[in-house]
Length: 362
Image (cartoon, rainbow, N blue to C red):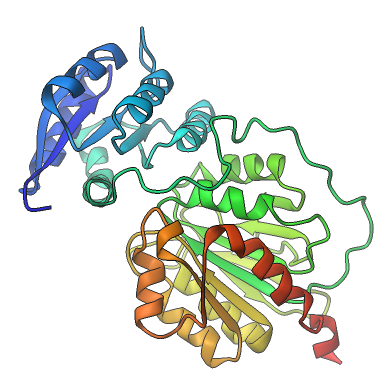
């Protein structure tokens, strides 16, 4: 955008309004055009000030953030960045807001001191710029305000699980919660692949995210712990602020978590997961890179391809942000480009037609 990105800051805390405004105004391409103490004031100021992006607190008096978000997405079609508390209730509300159409979120620091606010400065500025360029972006097919409120689908009956046919490694970022929920909810309980996911998300949010996915998916979804086994019909989500790798072991294949330094500015990093999958599983690996800003995972997808694995990128028209898939495609590392609504079927075909990993050990 040639003009400055016009931002409206909505928060009932005077301290947070001041700090967020100060952070954003340091960037010459951003202009904070106003602030509001609750949803009612925010809706009036949107009409008056015509912002490009809104930052929104969810816990406010009078008209709360959730109702404000509903009205903004219906009447104004503006991208909204949620500024979320680190509490369990805050995480739950954040995922509901994403299902309602919020563009993305940043987590408030646990301490609202200036030094702590610096930790989210670059993230917030980057997401506002991307949001201004992308607008609201596509919302996952059939994902409505009721997303995450669905009844739990039937799970497979407890039994000894078959060996996975492939390891499906998924890297995803901005726009990921809705897209991942849509994809995983389309897979049957007897999906033959084992799934490992790196979603760029702050520490403290991934456990709630995995629980919500598990509630609306027929496959099992859980936040990963070191030593968790790679099983058919199970998806393991990397915890925030950890890296995740896979490892082949005589008694079964597992994930291993670490606190190694950030890679591509991220922890967890898609690159770390993809390189591990390429090294350990070679032609039995499948790397899928989905919506997100930046290029994390693009280079490592080349390692999966070189090892004989399948590589897939989400199509531009179905991404909220095309950055990560575009980087992989531009580097020539994506064998296939597939729309979100066709990804589940593609994964089933790719995993169903592959020899089971147990056979490869013989």
